[in-house]
Image (cartoon, rainbow, N blue to C red):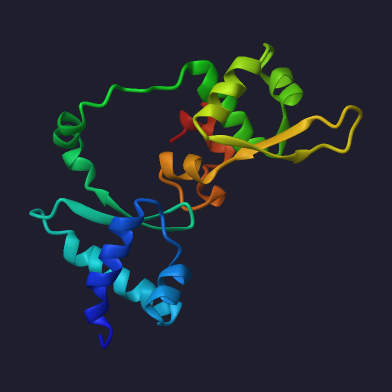
Length: 177
């Protein structure tokens, strides 16, 4: 391809950003068409697929991100000496409710879970997995919550359409598989 010489600059942009970069932003910076960015990145992903390479490019949260290959996570975690920061069951339940029902209020989350959700919602807000996205047109104008790009990144989703259908998650449907 004519633009192959731009693979290095694309890789540098993805590395320097650290966050997902939308194709149109890359195209603007390199002054090329967005479809050429997609083609170049597809070629780069193919060339990075060889076993000796430690990095790959993933499409996540509406952009492209340079990432370590999942098979190398054990060795990378040794370098970072990262303490596992897992979400509690309550936080995962609440996050799932927000993801599938958004926009949703705290009261709606509490109604579904059957317990108070103040602390869990605050935890999810602190971890930037959910955010306030507005106010409901109802008495008291309660806050509406939705997921963030960090949520998409964390779960490796391109967008919310990549969430599985709720019906596929129900126990009676999973046993039929």
